[in-house]
Amino acid sequence: MNPSREPQVLTVVLNYRTPDLTLRAVEAALREMEGLAGAITVVDNDSRDGSYEKLLQGVQMRGWDRVRVLQSGRNGGYGAGNNYGISQGLPDGSAPDYVYILNSDAFPEPGCIRVLLEHLESHPQVGFAGSRIHGEDGGYHQSAFRFPTVFSEFESAAATGPISFLLKRYIVPLQEPMEALQVDWMAGASLMVRHRVLEETQGFDERFFLYFEETDLCLRARRAGWTAVYLPKSQVMHIGSVSTGMRTWKRMPGYWFDSRLWYFTKNHGAFYAALATLAYVAGSLVQLTRQALGKKRTGGPDRFLGDLISHALRSLWQRKLVGGRPS
Image (tube, rainbow, N blue to C red; front, side, top):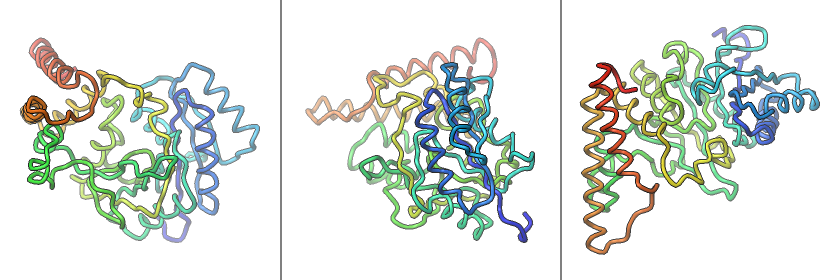
């Protein structure tokens, strides 16, 4: 990057059937991009509900010259949609120095984008800078995490005080950091990435339709020598799960289990992926034993353990049939 010119930031907002919220998110991002070089790209992820046309009209009516609306042409998921927007570069065809990924239901607050940019500018070894995400009531939404492991799978399923204490260094969700902190990975609702990192890692793995894609990207970048930093001074209000409908799920969808299995298999091998599932089952047995003794049941999606086991067995059977990686 030429130090004599301003760093260029490309903000990418992925839309899937939330055009009104997307326009609100873009309006907030435009405000926070004021004084910064770059542009905003909105990618409609093949909504097929009139979203693309509504977004085009909304941008034109508001006279947002720094914003362009693109159609991905297919709904390949979160990673694929963002990859498409990133690959288009800035409006003049050049590559940005940084990519700011913003959810369509997330609204940057004053200083949010600039805080991320200035940290990356002053810390060349940092590849990712992420925001503190909070709800409409100001309450913290989990934003900073450790990488998942066999131990974290056991701990999360057991959900038992003594076990959580012994395995506290493996618990995936971090307690809310009050100061800037190097972490393993961060939520992608508000995340700035050095473009060089995306070039070196080839961006999001599109095998993940939804979930685990940020985790995987941050892990690959960590292995390439880049770090990730959580910055609580950068704040974003996030409604959450509007496109996915996660808040109304009674059971986890199949693609969540696909993403979980692919994350462990890709990054640690098939044997480790099997151990991770067995660890979760073992932890669940601890929890079921506690329930049998009258302890309060922890919350979670319906039939999760059964769905996890059936998915693992089905994937194993498919591997035997096709002789390849899980499909």
